[in-house]
Length: 99
Image 1 (cartoon, rainbow, N blue to C red):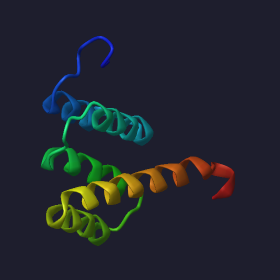
Image 2: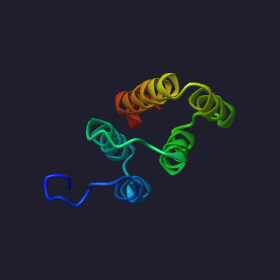
Image 3: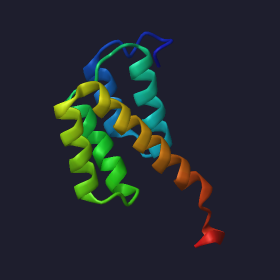
Image 4: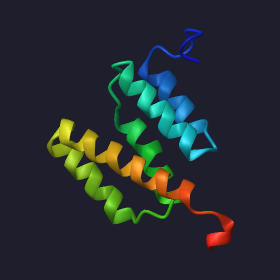
């Protein structure tokens, strides 16, 4: 979408994040957003928090990520990115046969 010039601002990325059914696609869009030097806002992290909840991350863990982000923006962003990558990668490793 970025190549077509459709996603150039924060609002566009936030809308797309909220629409994805695939967690992996949403995280890829978030990574693209960061690479485009567009800074995420509260709406961005709300959408990402919903993804983490869907993946089974406890609400108190997501609240801790939010607290870290509010205390130190850069460290918080790193924590969110690391958590999302870990959780989404773990989901890819689990198949129906494993359950």
